[in-house]
Length: 198
Image 1 (spheres, rainbow, N blue to C red):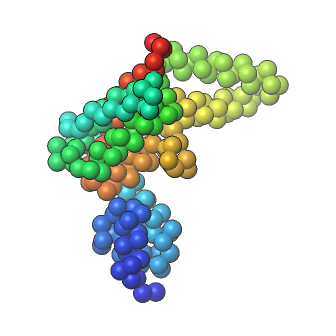
Image 2 (image 1 turned 135 degrees about the horizontal axis):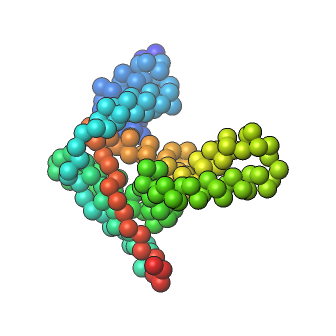
Image 3 (image 1 turned 90 degrees about the vertical axis):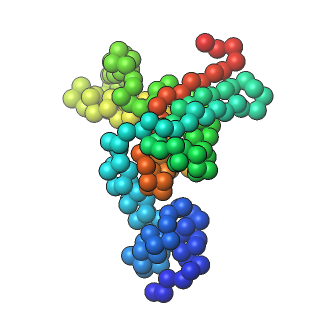
């Protein structure tokens, strides 16, 4: 199948990937736009894994104040260079992350940030609930693990469904940005302020 400039342009618009990457993905997927998007995401995921260990000492602190001024968010997002930190795409990413925090109200950045005491307490609650439902003892731990995934998806920013694309997590949103910007990106911390709440 002939790959046209229009096809490449549409794929670029949807993914932000480079011209040659778009052309290659369209060629590999025989012109199937959705398959090409998936190929680019997989490639981006591999690239983000390779960049995962790089030092992130630059970045920005972004803010978001929800209309009505009752909810506010500060979020620190780090990258490798000041050059990338100043790009429009990085700035937009940090704004999206701040809006995610305001909308979904996570308590932690990632699963590693959940204190062991909170995790043990949550496991115990889930275990009791599962036993109270009459589930057999030998499968309780598997059920608790499954329900713990739901806890992470609610409490941890990176595991939450992204508010604009619910089939994608915030972690995947960041991985897509890593693939496009070519640098490691890390959400360092955030603070959520809700008027009248501690």
